[in-house]
Structures are given as C-alpha cells and as structure tokens.
Amino acid sequence: MKTKMTTPFLGIMMMLALISCSSEDKKNDTVGKPASASKKAEMNMVVGIARIEPEKGLLNIYANANGRISKIVAAENQSVSKGSDLALLDNQTDNALLAIEQSKAPAQNAAILSATQNAKAVLSDLQKAQKDEALNEQLFKARAITEQALNDSKSKVTRLQYDYQKLIADIAQQKSKVQEIDANIKYRKAILSDRQIKSAYPGRVLQWDVHDGDYVTPGQKLGQYAPDGPLIAVTEVDELFSDKVAKGMRAEIYSQMNGQKTGSGTVVFIAEFLKKKSLFSDENTVEDRRVREVKVLLNSGAKVNINNKVDCKIYLK
Image 1 (cartoon, rainbow, N blue to C red):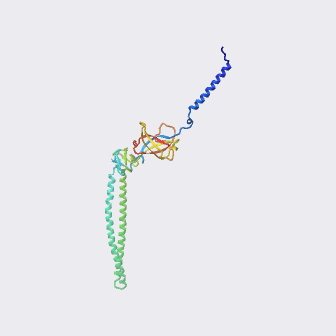
Image 2: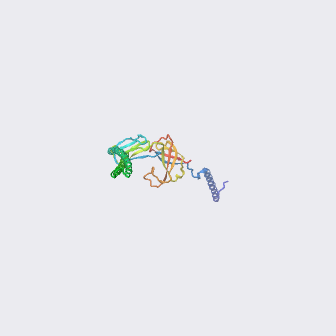
Image 3: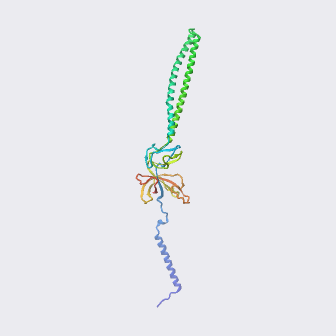
C-alpha cells in the first residue's frame, strides 16, 4: 500500500536538509583554515637592489689647474700607490719660472753673508773707536791732547755708528728679499704640484674621460678611481621597512643574471634620514617613495666587481 506525502511534509523535509548542509559547511571551513591564517605573516627579511662600491667610495679625478694634458701616466685598470702620478699637465713655462726664482737664491744668500761680515768688521772698528774716544776725553781733561784730536775721535765714532747701522739695515733688506724669493719658489712649486694629478690612496684607475693633449680647467672631472680596501653593497630600503633594519644584521647578495649567491656581509651603516629614491629609480615611476640608504660591508671572497648591480637580502632575524 503506498503512502502519499503531502506538500507541507515535503517542505519540512527540505528545510531540515538545508540546515544540515549549512552546518556541515561551517564545520568544514573551521577545520580547513589554520589558526595562523588570521594573523599577519611575520617578516624576516627585506630585499633591495644594491650597487657594489669600495668602502671609501668611488672617487672622481679632478683637474686643479688650467692646462693641456701632457701625459696620462696611469692607464685604466692600473694599480697605483698613494701619492703616485695619475696624469700630468704641461709644465714647461712653470718649470722655467721656478728655475728663475731658484737662481736668485744663491746670489741673495751670498749678499747677506758679505754684508754680515762687513758689519762684524765695522762693529769691531766702532768698539775700538769708542774706547779711543773715552781715552781722549780723559787726555783732553789732562790737557794731554788738543781739542781737535778729541773732536776727530768723536767724528770717527759717529761715522762708524752710521756705517754699522746702514749695514744692519742692508742685511735686514737682503733677508727680506730672501724670504720673498722663498715665497715665490714655494708658489711656483705649488703651481707645479697642481699640474701633477696624484692618487690620494692606493687603488686602481677605473676610467679616463680625457686623453693626452686635451685642454682642461680647474674642477673638471677627468676620470674615476677606486681606493683599495673592502667592498660594500649600497642599497636603499623603503620607508615602510627601514625602521626594522639595524647595524650588525646579516646580509647576502645574489647575482641578477642567474640568482646565485655571490657574497655575504654585515650591515655597517644606516642613514639617519629618509630621502627620495635615487639609487636605481625608474624615470617612468611617478610614485614618490622615500628610502633610507643602507651599506653592507662584504666579507672577503665575495664574487663581485665594482659597480655590479646585485640583489641584496637583509635578514631581520
């Protein structure tokens, strides 16, 4: 015997089925989501693009004087010691002027020596004449000599005093000329020194922007130079993460060509201020982001070259 289901009964059964499915879905959702999913993922590193530089920085080579380059002494990629010549400017005229000044010194020194010897002789005569004058004063009082003899002795003292004072003044003038000559010699040597472009540190010439025969002016950039010493990776950390970076944190650098690790190091410098992104900024980017410069001192053995662009990871923990 078949039992016919009424319409109200069917409606009740469908509602129970829907409630059961809804409860099961909520249960499944609760089981499927881990407890940590609702929490923000913890950050353990910051990543940026870095440029490889010497620890002392890349130094530009500048001209200190006007002139034509007579010789580039140190070729590109050549190692040089501190104080060695990098390039020379034409110095023929300045060498000639220096030689003229130097030639004056011996004659002037000889004149001083001669005047000094004459002054000593005159001083000796003056001292003797003063003694004779004193003696003649006594003899005149004793009526042993005439007044004319006394006056002659006084005149001799006066004349010798004048001669001695004149010689002393001449010596002072000659010494002043020597000082002037010495100052001119130092000045000419300084000019010549400016025409010798020397290395401030031991290092390596990276490139020249000029050639032999080029005319240069003071302050003109002639090339670039890399001092010897450890290398650093200079990167920029976005303002959103810059406060998380600290000195002493471990860092690694990776090749942008193949992604392989090329070195490691330690954060040694963090700028105290934020600046506009500049290191590897994109000209087409209109977003104004602020960054903090960070320097990583690389450990020895890093497989990088100066001016390499690499990826840099700084580990916050």
